[in-house]
Length: 168
Image 1 (cartoon, rainbow, N blue to C red):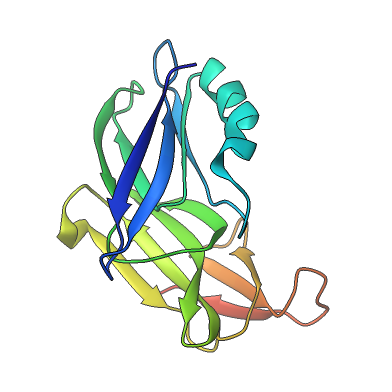
Image 2: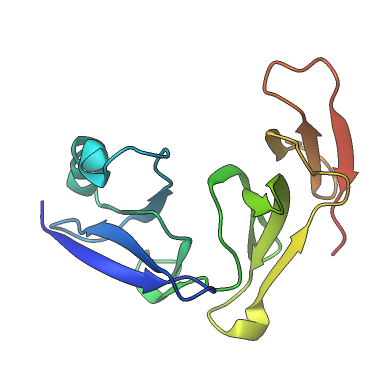
């Protein structure tokens, strides 16, 4: 599968390396993989090639968004400069917007943030840290809720989850 090494600048100006794997046929979707600390990008190459053979664009090390029309044609693509993220913890499509729960650096630790993307412009991208999420390591969207809701916890195996309503 064809691949391209890219470099994006983070908000602090530091370069972030990434590898973009393009499918040979029509694009059917996009996947962003955030690598583990100390793991070389080439470790993910077999998975990226597997996705690319199935028509999925794959990138890692940077939050990167791709907008598709209803036929699956790529309408726009861009790096999301408003946030640095270490993990994607959940995703949900809601009323024309894509929403993601991200694990983000916060001071000396980490927290969770909500990323909303409703289009390709800066005004269409909103990021907000989730209140009370400092130190939390697990999150996801409640499936089947009437309005978007997020569950957050200290760890994946936690018996104590906190439920957060997402404001429109």
